Image (cartoon, rainbow over all chains, first blue to last red; front, side, top):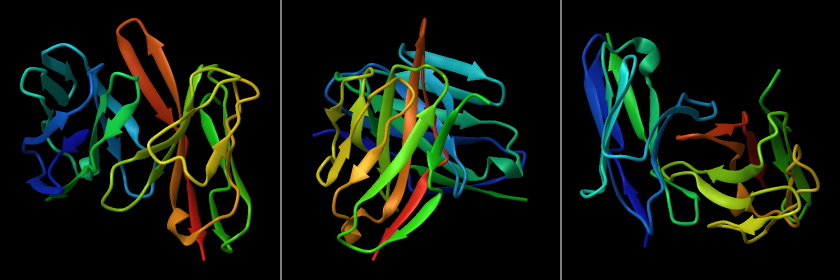
Amino acid sequence: GQNIDQPTEMTATEGAIVQINCTYQTSGFNGLFWYQQHAGEAPTFLSYNVLDGLEEKGRFSSFLSRSKGYSYLLLKELQMKDSASYLCAVMDSNYQLIWGAGTKLIIKP
Amino acid sequence: IAGITQAPTSQILAAGRRMTLRCTQDMRHNAMYWYRQDLGLGLRLIHYSNTAGTTGKGEVPDGYSVSRANTDDFPLTLASAVPSQTSVYFCASRKTSGHTDTQYFGPGTRLTVL
């Protein structure tokens, strides 16, 4: 079967760095996505990785290793507004997104 | 304003009633999707449409139907609602451009079936 695993909840301190991991087993691979979702709102796109390596976009970076079925999202200089759920998703061989349950990130002052 | 709109924002529905959730996008994206989101679970795909005039079943299609008469609209119908269909429903459209691939989400419809 297809499976996306990520931690349920993480806590970090304002100004610090946090890494959210995601491991996956899917039928085919056509890219890995990270989305941010604030409580009561829709998911919004953060990053897309299709090749191995690190993609940096401001305070957020996303890493992919296809051979290990592994990705992480790195958030630097954490701000209170970064408190949200972070969703990992993989596009399978049918170009459909398979979603993890999300990681709720709590930022403390 | 470009984007995706959904209606209604929320709805309480009696079991057995028929309900259509509306979704409209003005970005001219070909592919559109309906997901449901339940606490503790990832988004699950209900139905999708790769282009106007075509639709396909996702992971959890039972009890739902869709149509795609044109590029902009992608309504989701619950023929006879059941309490297990209580959920938050998101409509999304997909943009692919070069080596980027993004799904844009509507604001969601919170549905409660009693």
